Length: 242
Ligand code: SF4
Ligand code: SF4
Image: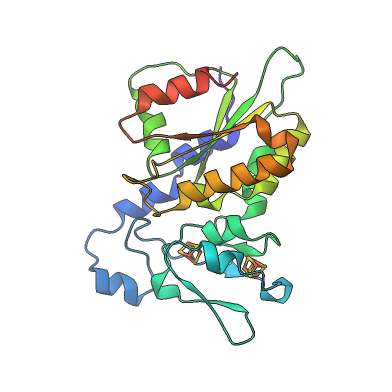
């Protein structure tokens, strides 16, 4: 039987789905007045929270936020304009100091999920981890299951808010533990982009390319793009990984 301790848990307790059910009866104004996101993470009341005493003012979060929700004061220290924030987590993935977190989503939490994925003792049995966004990639995986299609049992899935939230430290740590491959699966980007967070998927691709230049290990990682209706391609991605 497929052992997916954390991914299966996330499947049941996906924050996105729970929140979406709860938006009934709320107007946009009412939701905003009490600090809730309205789209695409409707009902989400968590905010990015940075431990600013460790901030180096590197500006990575300011430059990468897809919604212009981070500004800088006169000293160059970033501050959040929460009314513009869509809770995508891109600032969390961008921060080299790993000081940005949400109450229910942070670097250590996903790091622990990655550590929870078993590495087979048998060297002939590979282990691939797919980091997938909750917007288009995860529904595509749902559809694979609904269609009774099989996915290689070497693959484990971990759901993220957006691929923009991927912190490269996760990839380095996973490879150092003996994971054979990492795939990042997110919405389509480019001219006809479908990324729910505008450029999170594209940013993940950019970071991955950059990490390839600097880390030999990261050459084993891949990036895929899917729409919710591309579930057949999803299966091909995992089958063609190695
Ligand atoms: S969570 Fe996303 S939208 Fe909000 S500040 Fe961070 S990068 Fe910007
Ligand atoms: S990415 Fe992190 S260290 Fe850099 S400015 Fe933003 S919060 Fe500070």
